[in-house]
Image: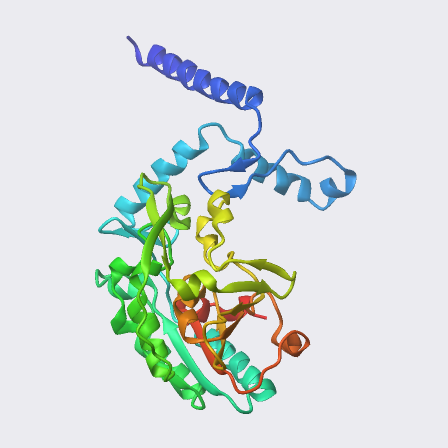
Length: 358
């Protein structure tokens, strides 16, 4: 077969493939959501003169064709495999012993200062007669020494200790290791952080010996499993219970809704980690009628959702505040801050990108 004929055959085959893909994309029904990415997909944009003139029509159409492309998940999988083998990471995620780990780098000193400034604002405005504590939750990458890029944890600690000199630092790093985290998610496992809760409580002079029952409620794939499209197994979500936790109740101060500490209805939600304290919420209060007098206020991120139930047995009332969703400037409209213990606890990802906090 001559080269000319070969070129014609290859051109016909290539053109046929392109035509097949084009036809399949035209007849394929648009998907509303991507289960593999846990997000809504771009829909066909509406035409208007204004959108054409300001070029948003073309930008949105480009996003639409990318989101709705046939076999998109298969191409994402192939791209992930190539990147992991060539660059050792895919969108700053990498694999270590079947753990999906985020590469948080470089250290953002401005963000750390921003966070400590926000904490100092809260202290100056509200905390005149309180015992103040803070703690840092390490990311999984802290426990992996595999030539991966990661922030300088010692520098981060030093800056925060210096900036928050009025608060007692509680170091929980030695209470954790890689296996205490989910393989496919950024969060820690509640059944693995009893030592962390004990360290916090003893450092706040309020430790009591507490026993728990472990109960599996569901299984899930964490957020990293959807960001890194590779094959991964589901992991168990367990909750720890005892009489104090079972008898306690939660009031969501923004809605006045009353729930249990573990919101089992969230089993059917997109993010099953929301079982813990009903997931992201600006302001809630936990009441434990088995304890008298001692109260705690926790400023937290999502890691606090599975940690705070383990503090319940030592406090009559725990107020939980997430300043990603409520401004500290208006807290006195909702709660009274008197002489409670106050704990600020954030994970490294938030500390290194604190501009999400109000």
